[in-house]
Image 1: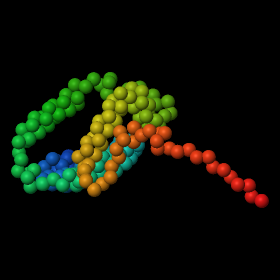
Image 2: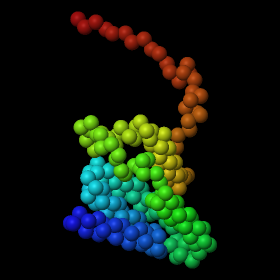
Image 3: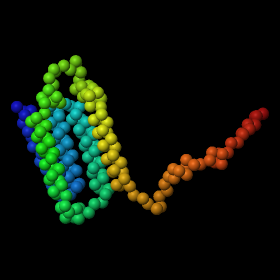
Image 4: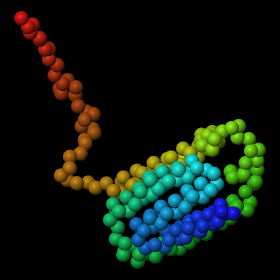
Length: 199
């Protein structure tokens, strides 16, 4: 009973914070509400007995991804007042959100039960812990999905670096073609060192 109350409490907080993420006019506040929703999702994972996923949610998503979002938002120096006046993307956002909601409903109601990731049909864990089961699933059955997710995060990291990169005239930078094209014979001089014997 207590677990059910906590589940509905965390779920309500996740939905409320997710709504505030997309309705907040300040992107910094949106990132803070996103971090709050990650904390509540970690609480749901703890209730479900998936403590490894709860810690990953806190370490990876809160400690890395959300902080990266906040860093990018603060480094871009955006004009929030000008962004709030632009409403040309509202229709695109409504269409995208409708498609995602329809896909989620189809998955919930028409997904084959024997292929469900949530329901374990045979309950045969062979004495493995929760973390070992997750690792074996990720690196065997879902290896390609795991690699694709890594590539998406790599692209996001490169995009954050490109957006925050500032070219300054008074900063010395590497000239890689010049370094690679250096001639060893002209830049290195070998000398014979003679040692005098002490009396």
